[in-house]
Amino acid sequence: MKLINSGISVSNIDKISCRHCQTRKSCLMRVFSDSEANNVDCLVTHEKPMRKGQNLFLQGDKFQSLYLVRSGSFKSCFTDETGERQVTGFHFSHDILGIDGIEPGRHIREVEALETSSVCTLPFQLFKEVSLRDNRGLYDELICNVSGMMSKANHLLMTLTKMRAEQRLASFILDISQSMYERRQSPYEFKLPMARYDIANYLGLAVETVSRLFKRLEEQGLIVAQRHRVHIVDMDGLHSMATGAYLSSKVGYGEQLSCRSIG
Image (cartoon, rainbow, N blue to C red; front, side):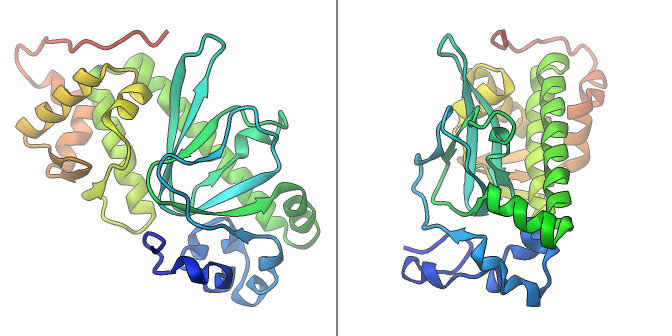
């Protein structure tokens, strides 16, 4: 078995180094030069691949490390005191996981692999000491990532409270498209590794509604969806759908697809 998108076999996992990692120039460690990267390996543990459904950490676990996604994808979830489970995000290569635990000292979410995935573990206390002493840019990079996470959380809140069901799904697809573009992958055709019920939970919709919406976007010529793959046919049209301009241009359009209470 090999790491997805890495071309590195499990038997060679111990030979991985930041200096030769294909994703380093896009991850937190990009602030280090090639020569400095030789000294970064003392900070990072290159973990073995995780299986689909395997948890990176659980809600309530003690916070000790940050995790840099090297390949694959993950979902984060929060369970409230009533047992209600909410998907709070999807994460891909170059993302940082575990930031939620810095302030409380324990993880407030659980993170689960959506497919065969791999991470690099970065002990936080050692990270702080090294970054503040030797490379302030590393700590600044983390702050930028925290800011980005807050921005995404605010965007999700707006999506769930202000947008119609059609706009929510269109906005979600565009967010994934943007993520692929930032990772130098095709923003027009990509894999959605998460299940439809995870998308529905994330967007505050019923699973049946999400299935109907995918079909409707196809009928309108905006996308082609085949199982876990999506091909954006009309990017401008999808943007118009997300902003509501596409809906308002449809004469007599008044159908409201049902969505469950976000509560």
